[in-house]
Image 1 (tube, rainbow, N blue to C red):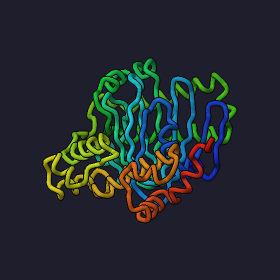
Image 2 (image 1 turned 60 degrees about the vertical axis):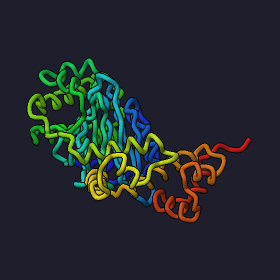
Image 3 (image 1 turned 135 degrees about the horizontal axis):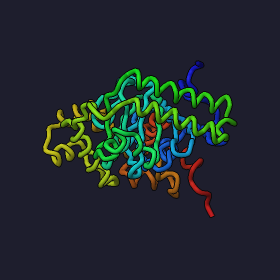
Image 4 (image 1 turned 30 degrees about the horizontal axis):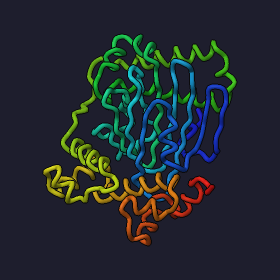
Amino acid sequence: MSQHPISAIPVATSVQAAGFESAIYADVDEQAAALTGWNQSYLQLSGGGFRGAIQRVDLGPVRLFMEGLGSTVYQSGQLHNGVLALGVPLRCDGSSVFCGVQSDRNALHVFSGQSGFEFRTGSDHVMMGLELDPVLANTLYPWGQGALARDEAGLRATDPQALEGLRQVMLMLFETAHTAPAMFSLPALRAGMVDTLVEKVTALNLASSPADTAHDVHWQLVQQARALVQGQLQQAPTVGELCMALGVSRRTLQNAFHRILGISPLAYLRAIRLGAVRQALKTASSVTEAATDMGFWHFGHFAKDYQAMFGELPSQTHKRCAPPLQ
């Protein structure tokens, strides 16, 4: 088999065929919104500009995606009730953390869960995923109902050979979408593809032994800190104020952020404020308005930090994205 389609982030712009879509993104928020029903938000953590890609195959009751990221991103999202969504890693550089647990290529990622999921990806990340409609998911005896009933997303231990079998079938389907997209318009072939995928998912036998997804102290601490920051983004607390509010030392908070996000609390505060400015620049009347609303007052330092994170000046983002003056 040839190399999988986005083993490197592709350079094609966008492709659409029956049941198949492929697109690349230079905006982290646009990529976050690309998966319908996932209610995602992405925060870019590494600098140098964003580049990502998503490919999708729609088989009706089963939908596949392949997502590539060339930047470190912190994802959060929540799927609709009843949808079973599974992730099968292709590239996982060892720095990824899924729902508080270090991720690796041999763990199945379950995105479904009433409390949503959080995922810090590495900067060389390729994940395949599949969504199963509720009616189909509930046929996956003995573990379909149990998986949907779990309160939390997380990693699941499974048979490595079964996981590799699912991975190879998904890769074959994406390769078919590239080389023979017309096949996806044939109902009989689509039904056969669905049956094959469901068989591979059933073979995972997840009824027993979920992976250890205990929410450790570091993950809980980062979640609490993020909630405090999100609740007052325009007047975000300082690192010292976060420590006081959470009742922890600066070193404890520093260790938690480095373990879960791979960056310091100060770098996180800068990243989330820069991301908020980037969002605001798409509708703001001026760069100054967007920057000052997020507490940036030294515009030379702000512009330098912004360019280091997103690969362009704030004025360039504003010029490209802001609506024309009436």
